[in-house]
Picture 1 (cartoon, rainbow, N blue to C red):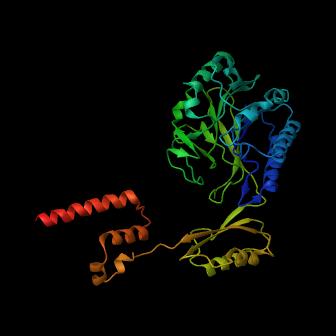
Picture 2: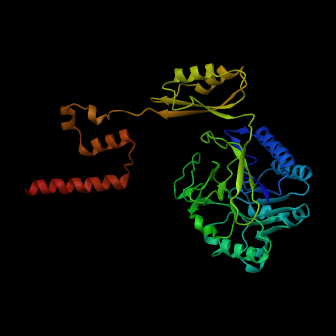
Picture 3: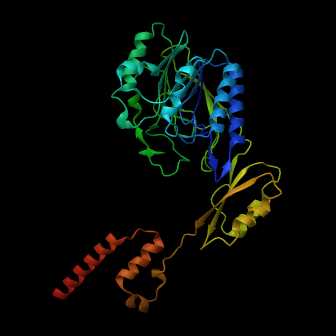
Length: 391
């Protein structure tokens, strides 16, 4: 069984207002070429086909045209598409039956009714099985769904064919670099699940949601995020690939190969590490960027106060005759090595009120000091003063 595993296309995504259709169409064309060249048994998209739950007609047409092209490129291939947390599960299933006529299985939402959960089991006759489970809120996930589906597959798998599970979720221990406002507990709004939630009886788990391609530690190379084929943000500063998976028999360890997807407009941050120490240094890095390299640029610069008036216009003028496009200036506040309070003279310290001193310290260190904290401090200060009066 040969699988082309991909996920997180985010079709329709715009970056700082820039339409990325050219990049996304290039990615889709490369997918079609891979399908034609490698002739996989299964083309598997593990969620987040679109960037929003209401993609435009143009974006949906781009996806449908790509699927049709893949079908022409590899007529015998089974195509499995899962809904991710960015997709509309209901929209994904509107054309469920027509898609099946083209051997395309579009699975948008989890069936709670046991009698209808068979739609999650996709049999490729003589080749293997795919257990397809789209994104759903954890509270809506039926108990032991993965294991019950795998048990059902075991009843059907008389010839020892490979078994693949496809899912879109966060798995504990994953490398979530590039995802904003995330932690070990939650990435992209999805709480982390333990790897054992997928049960036993599979040969490979084809995951989507995390954009950094990776195997999950401790899973014997049986559980993998394919990652996003093109970067969705500047912070995704790593290779973007698809994965070819080969499994001979049920129980075998999968063999995998990663194939890098070329982006005609790569996302580049200047400087390549850290931040320019001042505005003039930032502009110098733009001047030095090669004129013949196409790229979308982000400029990191450290500031003490605010950017100069017309900063973006000034920077845009520098790259106006180059192939690159400047999309964003990421201004970072300079860290103060000393607080204002520490620089006060002894006489000033004697004159300043304790509450004002504490507010200065909170401001300099970036510490939250809200009304509740102020009330607690005033209460503690009153108690200290009262104790001093009693002594």
